[in-house]
Length: 137
Image (cartoon, rainbow, N blue to C red; front, side, top):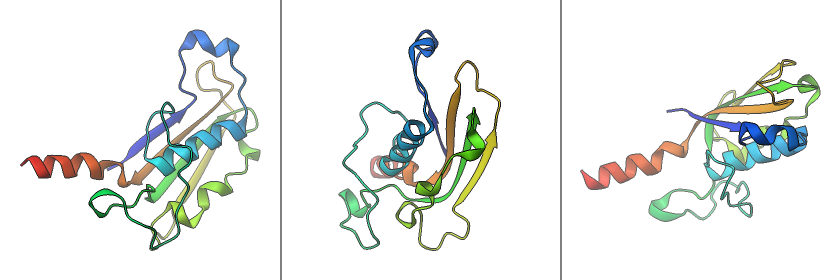
């Protein structure tokens, strides 16, 4: 199961009053991956990628979301020069993942946004909802 995360998340009427930077966009996308969130709002910013063997959370699941593979798509001014090395951190992916990060760039804007990022992940986001359905069945 795949999870799509996209930044920026704001109403079209606010775009003209927003300043976009690649570090800010990537920081938000990375934290969304770490926390398993699909929304920027209400993310747990204190959570960081844990080392293997970290303390598990509820029902034995790790606190940090981990992915098998990620596809990062950057669109806008200077997308080809962006440093995406933070997404290649081993604590964000399964230890056995062969090629955990693919990156695509496009100089074209996404709508009226001068810079935007999307992250398609095969990660643990679906585990909680599936576990709840299983418990109810």
